Image 1: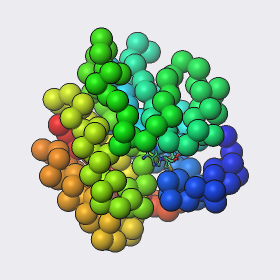
Image 2: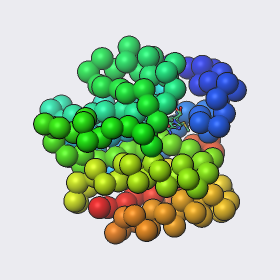
Image 3: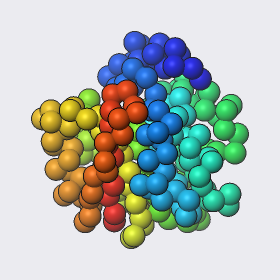
Length: 191
Ligand SMILES: C[S@@+](CC[C@H](N)C(=O)[O-])C[C@H]1O[C@@H](n2cnc3c(N)ncnc32)[C@H](O)[C@@H]1O
């Protein structure tokens, strides 16, 4: 899916899409390193959008690992299904996805890669998503999410950072990836 299609969805759903262009290959690569996708057994991606990070996950993950992408936008999800036939996608809000049913008989999730626009979300939604997702991250698992540099100073950005520290025992930040629009850095949380 092109950047034009992404921008079109941004115009229609700006509150959930939260960015005007997809993540760059440089940010995608840094996300893969941060999440240690190369050794994952079961990967969850939140908000795959047009697949900028999904493509990097496909290339980096062990061939026998499992993957689920949760995407609220049905237009994005149907394009992802066509483009990545070996990967599974659910059309849902990450705050309401039924993990208990999904995880029956499956390996625990050990890597979460998030492309969600946390800074655009109100407190209740930030809390609801983290509260629904993080209890399903295995001990020792990794959670990687990016934040646009500068926007993290906004009250919603500060609140998200605080919530991460409250919900994950270890949280670090990466160096800034300048080769992204806008420049971004990564929060890397360890369960
Ligand atoms: C900033 S875009 C990122 C897209 C892609 N991951 C990237 O990095 O280029 C955010 C994506 O999150 C999706 N999204 C927003 N709120 C969501 C929610 N509550 N649950 C699942 N997906 C959501 C949007 O539809 C959009 O595809």
